[in-house]
Image (tube, rainbow, N blue to C red; front, side, top):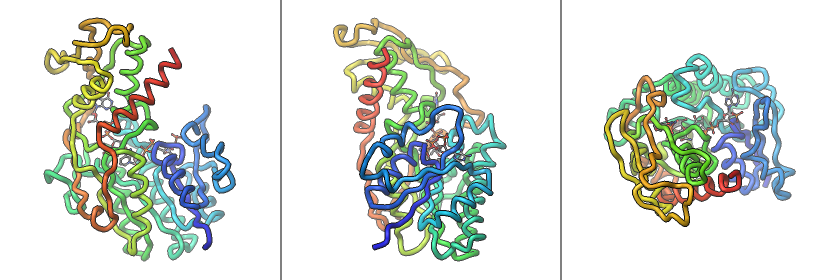
Length: 358
Ligand code: NAP
Ligand code: GDD
């Protein structure tokens, strides 16, 4: 059977790196688009180059989603069977500071790919996956959000992704393209970007334990999220494109926890007990109980978490939890990783990282 060719935008990101590995294991030839950067930006995919089995089927191309010419040229050259559009300015908080740029990349960037497929007359050959998001639900209109829940985006990021969601559907319906949205809820991993809250917490705690930092500063610790593992979720991106027909799917664990819970469980995983005192901007976490021999850098009643208002967003998304009944049925979706397993994996990774850096 002919090897399938996949093109991944955002290959240097968390999901891109896991998806590349997944597809290479499935015997695909994988092409990725990476941006020009003044410093090294391929950390997450370096191990693919080092893997003899994958090396000859893995290619990187310079490109940028906002540059129609570069995107179109790459698609013309490769003629991929599948395109996974994972590239984005993906930070919700940053999108308030960079609304125009976020829109260019996330909205117009998506259109650039779809329009390239159409202009190159690849509609019958190339399937398109769009990395949609639970942020579309923003101010939630239903307790658990499904494919039928009304959208209410609350940030430039979410609004840009709403355009991308609809333009994907428009091209599907107008030009009979295989173009699908995976509406994924939050997913994390040891490869998660360092400014997203879960990774910020696991890195922050690891630095405190190793005496590199003494306190972690956060924003809204009462936000509720449905957190899964990125490795499980990229398999679903692939499954979305293996369906008989193009469609949109919610991928979620259907379990919800607060940021505060995530912090407590990270400390608990290390055998450290914390207590919360104060309210609002004065709320903080103190060390209550720990093994002094194991953690010589910690002190009794040391303040390890504080609230800093700079991490609050102009418009907060307080509460997200998905209903993935459709994906369970059609994609045979079952989340594999519990929040506890996710925490242990992330904590182990970051403890090792900062133990070395000490
Ligand atoms: P990520 O780690 O932030 O990766 C984003 C990727 O996009 C990086 O490779 C980045 O390149 C690339 N990129 C940014 N701007 C670009 C541009 N103008 N042209 C080309 N590439 C560009 O994000 P992620 O967590 O893997 O998420 C993947 C996708 O899923 C994103 O679209 C995100 O919005 C969406 N999503 C994520 C989640 C989640 O919880 N992780 C949930 C729902 C949806 P650099 O490495 O050079 O920065
Ligand atoms: N990043 C960050 N930093 N978030 C914080 C902090 C902090 O210091 N303190 C509290 N939070 C809260 C945020 O306000 C938000 O409510 C929650 O923690 C999660 O924040 P992020 O981890 O930044 O993720 P997100 O939910 O805003 O966005 C992520 O998930 C979306 C899917 O719902 C990103 O990956 C998006 O790209 C993705 O679409």
